[in-house]
Length: 201
Image 1 (cartoon, rainbow, N blue to C red):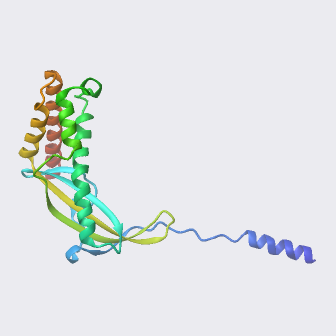
Image 2 (cartoon, helix red, strand yellow):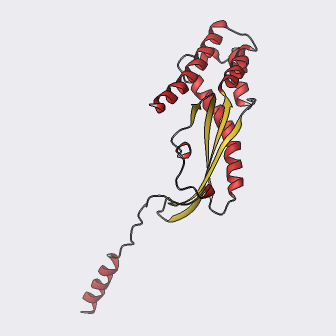
Image 3 (cartoon, helix red, strand yellow):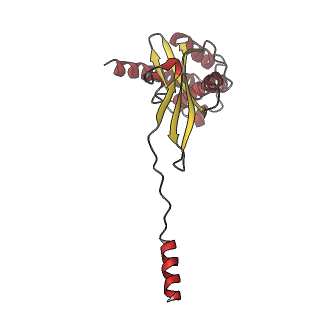
């Protein structure tokens, strides 16, 4: 009888399961300037676009809820400046118009990639800032508080076009590669314009 009871107790202990945590939806607890909702430009769905005469880039940063909003926004701005150039470089390189193997040693291609890699772009300014405190589930399902910051960086489209063109033309090189680079830049800007047109409808 004692053995049966021990088996029963052991069996019951083996059936104990820990409750599974649910990954609940994120919930915004507080927003900059007591805003009622997250502005569309800061929702994290878009990296780069065009607004009137400007090209804009959206940079997002997440920190612990106890971080200062000013520090979070500043970090998003600094990261955004280099991320914007990486984004442009990747789009121009992957456009299909530039063969990186052929262009790798070309002075024009080297000058353009160095310009973008070394963050030499001037005229970029923050045009809008936003932060919100969010309650969300971490990888274990525990609820944690985070500070999410988004900065909109802007540069005049004509100024960005000029600087990219000048960087491409500065060192000469193979005329065909240079033309391919300029065509890739044109396609990049045309794509931004098309996105803006699609949103307007």
